[in-house]
Length: 106
Image (cartoon, rainbow, N blue to C red; front, side, top):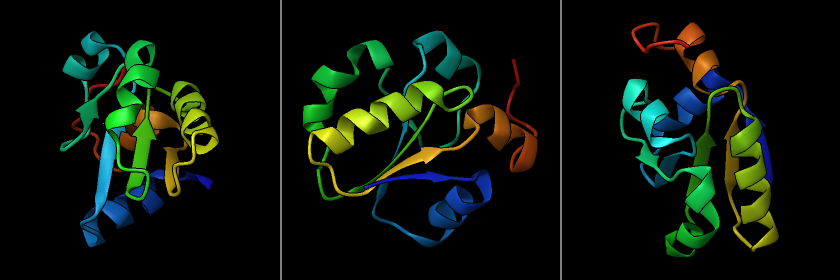
């Protein structure tokens, strides 16, 4: 199932749960410029081939710049049978604006 959660809802999961994976689907240069601590970078262009290494039963939280690329990646995962897929609504831009203003915005 795909969920579109706000930065506040994702922050709650990060602060209170242990069994999740945070995935940044932006390009490498974007990830190097600004990222959420603990995120793994799997650029969208490589996503389908790398997704096979993800646990279908683990909670997966995906983000990009504003949320559209990560939504596409989330939709792919759901189609492939992944059970708990979350898109960070508004992406890292909304995260920086609402949760962690120390993260670079672009």
